[in-house]
Image (cartoon, rainbow, N blue to C red; front, side, top):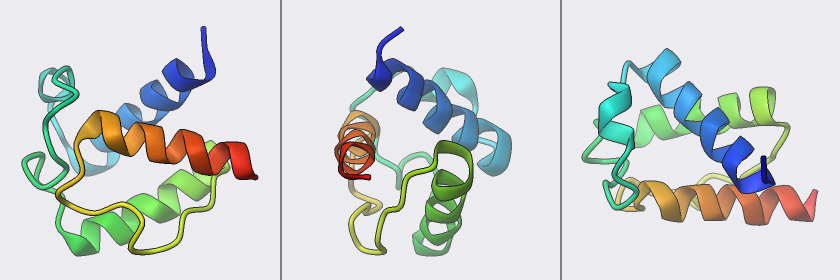
Length: 83
């Protein structure tokens, strides 16, 4: 399994477990975080969970509600590579 797949799975796990996003809504990589119901407060919580569960540090303002799911995973992968 590739790093991006592992990160994607971990990210989706956070969305479904913590934020109650139905798993079937995460299959479309073009869906935005806003469309999944994540507002700016949820994004702050998401960043904390990413740090805790996936060991990646992402500054506020890097991940935005208008980012698509696949775009967000790519940003996480990029930041993970910098760690």
